[in-house]
Image 1 (cartoon, rainbow, N blue to C red):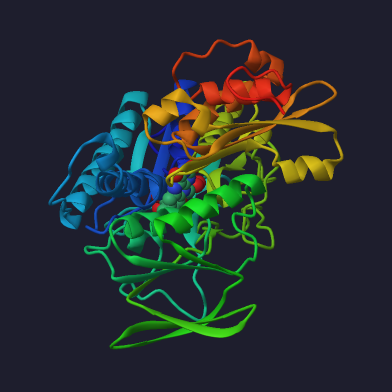
Image 2 (cartoon, protein in one colour):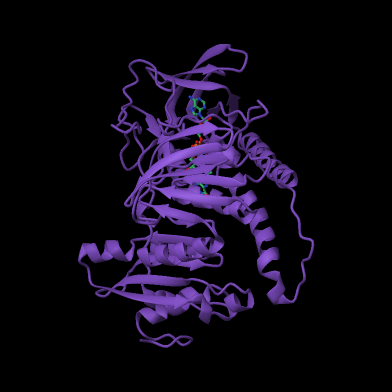
Length: 476
Ligand SMILES: Cc1cc2nc3c(=O)[nH]c(=O)nc-3n(C[C@H](O)[C@H](O)[C@H](O)COP(=O)(O)OP(=O)(O)OC[C@H]3O[C@@H](n4cnc5c(N)ncnc54)[C@H](O)[C@@H]3O)c2cc1C
């Protein structure tokens, strides 16, 4: 083998691509991973959207803004006087940038430790499992591989009537880079990303209007959870307008005026900044050369089977660029699976146990089917729902909002879905994911000892409530 011949070449080093490269290298394969991401400083960085412009920077700003918000509205009840409270956006942004930089360097270190050849620049699949690599200086070389994994990710969708201008009309990345709190902000799209970004800037004082085209709030969530969440977002001051279809925008000295239509007619709203968070599309820009045999579906996703094979010999695709939820952990598990399958190991991804988390306050998390989905399936089911108000730990934390809800089958007691809105829901859901991975019953959870006082007891009591055997809450 020469330096241009590899067992595996992965194109894309986001949360789907880099774990794939590392796992393949752990399996003693010779691996290269190519990535072209550049940050705003013009420098290459590994980690993709998640690390540079998604999961990590958004959580850094959510944490800073939540601390400020809690100091402002919650500390008094603990007997803590936080007078003269102030914040500095520049410091928040610097902290966030530091976290992103360290994490990207961490991936370069992981590649080195695993023996992965990390290549920066553009990768393009050519026919015959060859990959063209174009480096920063424009020089190209053709590499060969027994297997190629496409992990090129996704890009934000734009509204045709309102193209991004990087200043007043921005995508989610732009909204993570504001250097000051906008006085009036409009978020288009009340999905996970829109709600998280709206929460950040609302907590820091922006007037935030959220325009959502659908009539139903958080349609993908259990509707009992969605209803509870809407109540809390309204309390935070997010002005969420449902059924609001945006038609276009115009800009003048007063700001951006958005035109939209809802059930009661044509409306306008004028703001200083607009964040368009209407979803993401698969990204395959200049990824596929002539005759590769890789097919795209009608929405632009790379077509794959349940094991992420594209149909072109030894070409695989993982992460946001293929079907399924656009989530970092879903991409990671696909990447790891492919890294193992290429090495001849037996493995699979359990798509029935993909957790979803909305990192707002209260947090929202779920896994499995919603009550609406179980009902529609016709299977007889039972529900246990335990409010955090009845949790000693949640009360001690001054975080009694929300509940943990378990839906299970009546016939064999199997857990079908778990839905949590409340403190640390994103952490609590891990227990439910593990339970579902092992096809656990509510009885399994009921018989599992949970430390006291912890938030996890809410899940324990919810499992008991499903059989009307709760101890810390009246069984109805
Ligand atoms: C604001 C925001 C918040 C989010 N928060 C969360 C969260 O909390 N939890 C969660 O699970 N998900 C979250 N997501 C979604 C998450 O970021 C994506 O699901 C995840 O990044 C997808 O991983 P990926 O590896 O498939 O693609 P990406 O992360 O997009 O990585 C793809 C990489 O491939 C590179 N690339 C593309 N084409 C080529 C090419 N031809 N040659 C070389 N390199 C190429 C790209 O530059 C990029 O670096 C968030 C997204 C956003 C925007």
